[in-house]
Length: 304
Image (tube, rainbow, N blue to C red; front, side, top):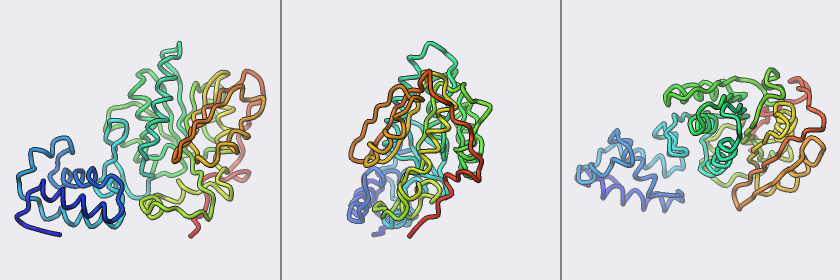
């Protein structure tokens, strides 16, 4: 696969072919990303290096990607909604379909009469959702929470790197942020929702995303139930929850929001992506925080 005299452009083409044979989705885009990384530039600027001999290190990175190690973990950066975020092993790699969720949140926030809305991002991971919302809707007070200290630390570094103001706290979804009860205009959540024991066909997720971010209990909805209860107490009347879940869970998730606490819910599902939008009712009980001994979301052992 290697050649000391091959130009970067020829190497990208050969790498793209090799990655495609290895089953990599968007092989051409990833080959460009790897080339940009070895040249210490961006994919948008790699064209200036096309005629230069490709650095030998390029082929080592291609081999790693062909083994289905995520591009983001190889280059240490993930692209999300037009921004570049730090990425590292042990923290969930953001998926492009989640950009659709963020776009809907941004549209809703921009239509609110208040210019200082409050947003809570549950299961924030590396903070890409919280940071994108804060950047796209100036004046928004954004708090992200995650059970993983590593994820919260990375989220804080991402916010600092992009010059975006957001607060990140390490805590459990079930007991998160009691000081914000009844004060959030929007709650966002992309929780773990894969049922324990289900096979994961995508090697990038199966072998590299942390178990904490994948497994949602026996039916996949353990953390989703905690999200429902927490969102119920955090949201103002009329506030919205935007919840990402599995496309095969639409009916089960809608059933969770079929009560007096929620006056409206709508679920949009495609083959590989589903988002529930639920409106907090002006009636119905607010959920009280449970204790860690009552509920342990995220603490789901990874099953082989």
